[in-house]
Length: 265
Image (cartoon, rainbow, N blue to C red; front, side, top):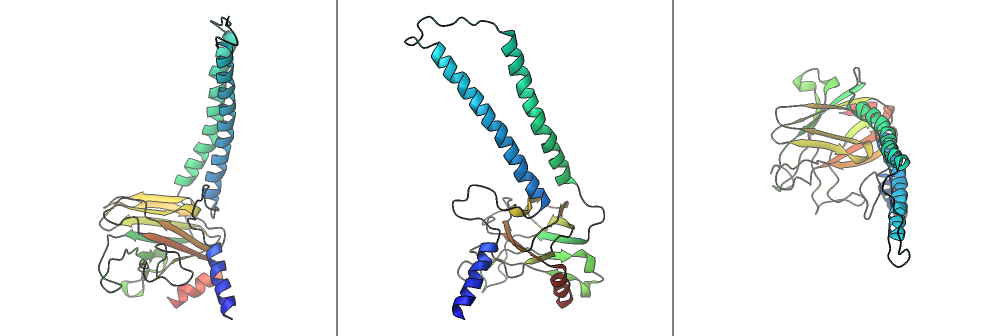
């Protein structure tokens, strides 16, 4: 029984989308937006390899033709119309192939849904000494605006960082919170990000979302998580001491589980 419990906990860790030691690539995409970012990265990397091969060949040829030992009498190439046309048109074509998908992805990332299924507000706060025995803890309040009929019946909660000396078995160090942001999978969401007192950046790498905002302003972004799981992020804005220890945890569940969670809260 104990082994089964431990295996389930470690399986949960393996399914979490979070940073890993010595990880070179991006996290597995959880949204179409992040999938588009990864695809664009791969496409640009293909052109970079072509440019690397072409430039390397040109350098090797230049070293060969102008080396005093292997070629004492170098070739006198002063002007070449063909190569000048190629070196002008070829980079332009490459930039065109890169610009078209990048502009399409950029506009799709900035597009905000007119009629989202759920609207959630994330509020960034400075550090407070109000929890965990008077120690500093970062808070990230969330507000589900669609269910706010009055102040007494509003669905709001605070998400506090789990201190590094108080994690449970299976929790990620300095990335776990006591109350996760629960969202339904395969549902279009609208995130409203606003700060209370300091600049804030709501960022979840596996979702391809990084929404920056400054005090007295709000920002919007759309998100649609395509699979269930736990997605970890952090505030990416410099906002005072220990600003890096502001974790963001998104838990994507089925629509039925989300309805049960809303009814319980």
